[in-house]
Amino acid sequence: MNRAALAIAGEVARETRTLLAGNICNTNVFVDDRETRMAVRAMFAEQVALALEAEVDFVIAETFIWVEEALLALEVIKDGGGPAVVTLAILRNGTTGEGWQPEEACRRLEAAGADVVGLNCIRGPDTMLPLLESVRAAVGCHVAALPVPYRTDAAHPTFQSFRVRNGAATTNPFPAALEPFACTRYDVAEFTRQASDLGVRYLGLCCGGAPHHVRSMAEALGRTPPASRYTFDPTAPRASRDTRSDLYDDPR
Image (cartoon, rainbow, N blue to C red; front, side, top):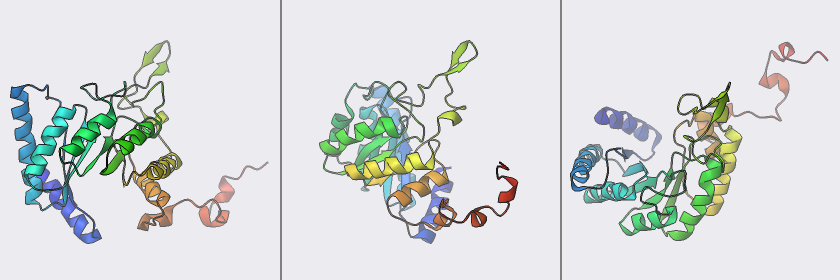
């Protein structure tokens, strides 16, 4: 699966003249003892070897709750000689699994050789942005930000913490009923502008991201990707936006 995915991504990278990245992520078996460290390192080594075989430009290590596991991933990537992007998923309480603040965690990753550090997943734009400001101030390397496109807030800082009323019961909509909490393209564009103003230069989206979200990110940065020809233009004459507008007009 890794080889097939890298081959497909490689074709696209060559066609579009963009960078090609390999990827590894948290394993969910890491508990920071000798046995699991060895097992996890072997997993990372296998995947990084496949990425290097595909001649990637860099390797991404993402969605780490435990910084010690992220450091292990970083070590394997650097052993292969390539640039490394390492991003963390920050828990509801605002810390890593070890209880470290995001800025301290990213400072340690930078000191260990990461070329880009930052945050991805779990948190939406509004609850990731304040953490990014602290990270940006703490490190000298580039900073990455890839939130989930959901409207997390102070009461629900992660998309796993949403709760909804279902009759008399309260239920958790994660992961299959998150649609009511989805960000619009305009929410994503605003996050992009604010993160860019902080000095964040590696921007993207995690779980739930869609093409119109990514297009809005690009446009918020002043770019015009090919798909911009589909961008809604509220100033365009209505007939050009909807040739059957007579079907929808309010007769009043």
